[in-house]
Amino acid sequence: MFLAAFGLIALAAQDLFAQDAAADLLAGQSDVPVYQQLKAKFIEGGAGFMGAVLLCLIFGLALSIERIIYLNLATTNNAKLLAKVEEALQNGGVEAAKEVCRNTRGPVASIFYQGLSRAEEGVDVVEKAVVSYGGVQMSQLESGLSWIQLFITTAPSLGFLGTVLGMIAAFDAIEVAGDISPNIVAGGMKVALITTVGGLIVAIILQFFYNYIVSKIDSIVLSMEDASISLVDLVVKYVKK
Image (tube, rainbow, N blue to C red; front, side, top):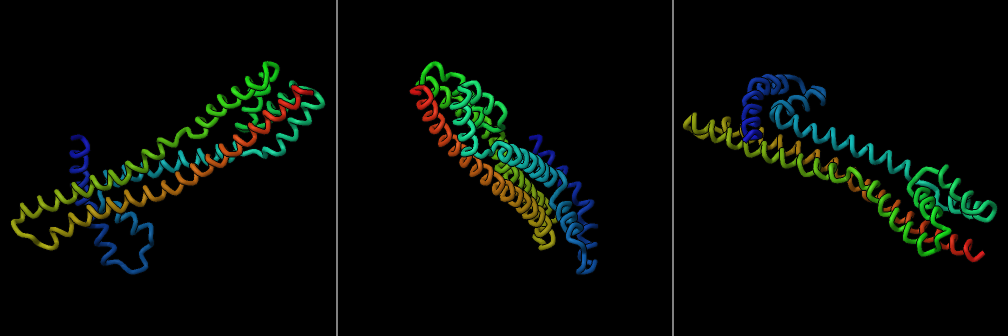
């Protein structure tokens, strides 16, 4: 109910501003800057719904950029880390290897630290610790994805809602005029199409970021699993030694 009322108010408000913006573009020259054209279309689509769609884009991009930065920082050279841990185990024992992990950034180093902390309890305990803490690290990597997915689905939904309200406004105008005039129908249809296009564009942009983040997480998880197996092998060799 609130969204419907809000949308009707937005549609009424945009009638006051859209006509001037559209007139400027139609009467204006062909060299109108792109940002002014986008601004006019934004106003024509209804400040309420287009503003909500824009917020979905802003928040979605903010979360996506934060995840990308976090994942890039979480990416480490596992081969180099394994070499340092193996060297530390041979020269200084478990404590030296733990110190190497403590001074290394990333989820793989954290998993190694948890596994090495239980090296004295046996290989089975180390393996269970690595698997358990690996699940914790995976959850941290996937943090925020549900919110990005929410904005991906919300943006086109808001656009479709604006479409429905635009169609309602067009039929209301036809009812008041008592005649099916192309100008009357075109106004409502234009608002409907602009809101739909805006929501779909936002969803497409965020979907690209979402897919990149998911692929990045899959790559890190795969490297975590490979490194964890190598760590267990190192612990087995150390225990036998």
